[in-house]
Length: 168
Image 1: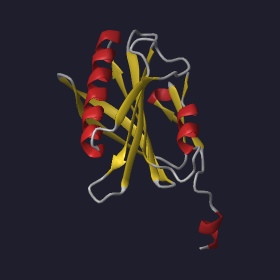
Image 2: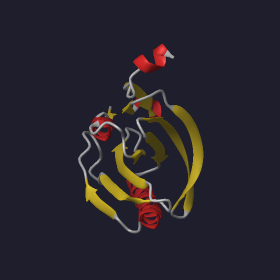
Image 3: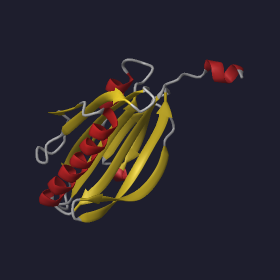
């Protein structure tokens, strides 16, 4: 019990993703999974890593598109699906904006959605989701989704997470 009281809520660590193409800074040891998600007219295999710390979930998802056109179509579909889910969950309180991610491809452009609201019980329901891509030497495009769900107990946790995303 004493050890638990001494452990920090946010124990930040570097986590390599997508064969080392991205290093993410996560506040806890992540669980990893793979799943298929519908993106436009196709179903895409997505690798994920995420964990919960300080009243929030921090997660990274990644997939590989064959080219920039496919990557842009997938990210547009991913963003539209996420926007629709959060508009329903928060009563439409969703804002979108371009963001900057060092070494990210300019097209498809990095983008972020922020959603604020409450669930059916009145509990705050928040999300920040960021998408970005990186062109690979073989012409394929690695695409990424970084997410913070909930309101972290430390005011700077979401910023630390997003600032800790480093493309190779």
